[in-house]
Every structure is written in C-alpha cells, then in structure tokens.
Image (cartoon, rainbow, N blue to C red; front, side):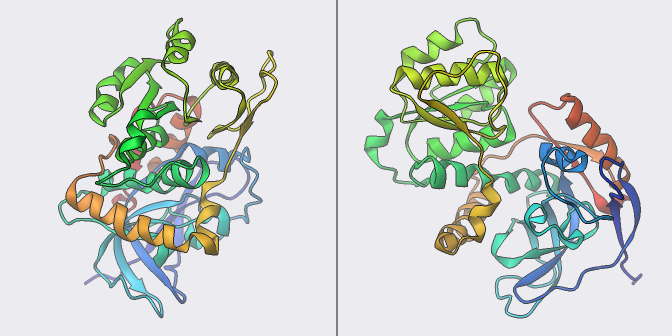
Length: 345
C-alpha cells in the first residue's frame, strides 16, 4: 500500500489565488479526529475570507474552509464515537480557530469530535457535503429567533404561526425552511421561480418570487409573522423586510448578509443584525444542543431520509478551488453547492 500524502490549496497572502502544494498530515489532539477528505463544499464565505472582506487576521501561509466530508483517518485520545474508516461529515471551525490544520481545502484535515456526524454508507460524499450547512441554519432558527426544535410530534399550536424566511433558495434558506416546517410552523419564503417546486416539496406553505413587483403587499397580506429571517438578500430586500416588520410594530431581524447600506433609511424602530453562528457551538450552555444536532438530528435525518439535501456540482480536484471561489465571487452560482474532491490531484 502506498504511503498517504497530504496536499493543500495554500493561500500565501491576502487575496492571492490558491496554490496546490504539499502539507503535513495533522496529528489529532484530545477529542479530535483527522479526516481524509473525499468531498469539500465551497461556501460564499470562503472567497470573502480570502479577500479579507470577512475580518479574520489569517496566519499566512494558510488553508481555509470549514466543512468536510470523508473518512476518519485517525483519532485522538478520549474520542469515543469514531474510529478509522468511519464515513463522516464535519464542521472544522477554521474560521474561529485560524489554524491551517483545520482548513478543509486539503486532503487531510483536523476537526473536533463534537461537530462531526456519521453519514450512511449509501450517501455519496459530494451530496453529504450540503448537510454541513445545517449547523448554521439550526442555530439561527432555534437559538437566535426562538423557534421550536424540529420534531416528529411538533406543537400543534405552531401551525397557526407564520414564519417568513427570505431567500429560501439559498443553501442557508433551504435548510431553514426545512427546520421551521419540521417544527410545525406555517412557513412562507421567497426565491427565484426555479426554486419554487423544491421549496414547496419541503413543506413551505407559499413561495414568492422575490423580484415580483407585488412582493411587499403579497407578504404583508399573509402576516403577521412570529419570525422574519433573511437567509440571503440585497439592500432593497432588507428595506422590504424592514417595512414588513414595521407594519407589525417594529423590532430587529437577522440577515446572514449583515446590515446593508441603503439610500433609503430603514423605518424607525427596525434594525438588522448579523450573527456568527459558529460561536454558538463553543458556548458551554449549548453543549446539549450541539450533541442533539450532530449525534441525533443530522445522523438520524440522513439515515432515515427526513433531511433533504441540496443540489451539488462537482467541479474537480484541489486545482479547481480558485476557479470555484471566483464563480462564487461573481455570483454566478445559484441553487447549488460547488464541491471539489481533494483526492483527484
């Protein structure tokens, strides 16, 4: 058997294109695992980290990315749930740890046991990568906006409460819609017409074309809303959302894009918030929530088929990372997740 070697898409300076080169295979510490990556999703945040738009003071040279799907290569002390050879997906938390060993744009990556889940033998690795986004959508829906957790027996009163998720066609919104539906709420969402059938199949009650000239009045007629959340938006979208919120007394809403500068000020009494969801999983009070999510919801959902997965596009090996990040920056990727396979080159 040939000796396994690591290769990585290295970033040598702010904004520089990834360069494929050798890397050491990391050694797991206490409670850690090393994953041999078989498929890695590219995330819109990746190019923003690369270009310095997301303010992380990277330690160059480095390897970025947070989501992995592959096979357990080795485990550290006190790891009890995994063994070499297990098929898994994982959130490595590079963006918080700022250590290239946790950057997923490489063949072998370090991660923590607590944010790793088993995946079924029948689930291909590229498809499994889309499930890594669940942690953020679940944190947003449950920890931040206060919806109930998904359940096979949700509270019957929830069916009379409206939830609006703007941007249901995004990967974040795709899972946010599922989560709110599984918790029993009446879910309304916006998306492009091409995503409508998919979102209705997930259980959304209504799906609205975000570009419709009557979008504001259409959504206003369906309110009031228990929760309004934005998974993807523009400055113009945020103004519409703010007006909806103002119509029911004001307040704040969370946007994954953060507050956007607008020529028209938001209505008085309305504000936009940005949340870093990865932080939630390092808070002691959320340990039970983390355990439930990664050990129960994700694992059982993938095994039983109760978690629907988004569309992915395989773009090649490590050498394709730069091209993929450029596609995300130009905004030409919609309704699917770009995935590369590190073992191809």
